[in-house]
Image (cartoon, rainbow, N blue to C red):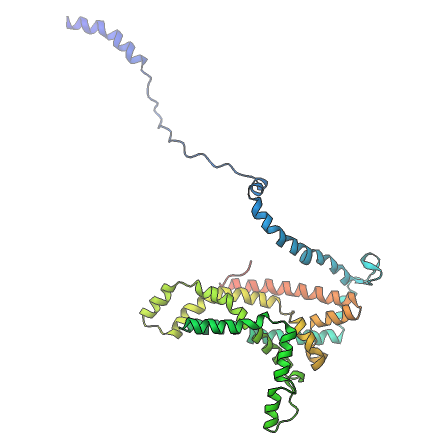
Length: 338
């Protein structure tokens, strides 16, 4: 009976087993991940964030109108330009204006004065805000620090006309400095009209006017240095000078490198208004720089082509200097501006 029953049941069992689907020999597929975000086109992102672009429009228009559109005027450097004939009717002279630059004694004198003043500003005026920032950072009293900051910030907001007038009252022939020299037997001292010391005077005025304003950037860089570094150094027994030398100054290196590159790019640009106001007192031999040369020769003298060539050449040299200084900064490992 048992054998027969197995024989009767086996076809039904076999049919039921055959109806069950066989498992796939391959591995099961992993579950699908989250759906990929849809990529937006540039115009879709601008449409979505149009409020941000509205804030950018005034700045873009400013640079377009006052920085890029005037570049088209450099064509005057290749013309014998006349304001009455205009750009399209003035005679084309090619590189003649640039050739005249290198044979003009006044241009060479302006270049020498510009380079000397710029070099003195890099040596003395550039590190002055760094030294002041380090000094103020070492002060413990916040009240004293704020008073000093306010006092040194104020000259930046004074125009050069007022600055020159103040210095004239102090260092001029009728000022207290001249009276002091009179008291000790030295007569006729007028520092404001001395061509031999004029360049040092210019650098001193720049330091007095802008040293406080320049410390703002370095204060921001100092505040970004982690305080844990100072605490660890103090725990290890490092004094204030060692903390400044090994922590504060290395933290300022990227900012110093950036500002130095920009300063090198402006090496042919010195204070136009500052020197223009003082040139009658000391003479063109001491106070003539490229910016004042362009003004007197072009706007006042009417030689638009030569002055435009001087300005264009100055811009090209400044661009080359910025690129060169940026590469040096990157090779030294301090980073650059691009």
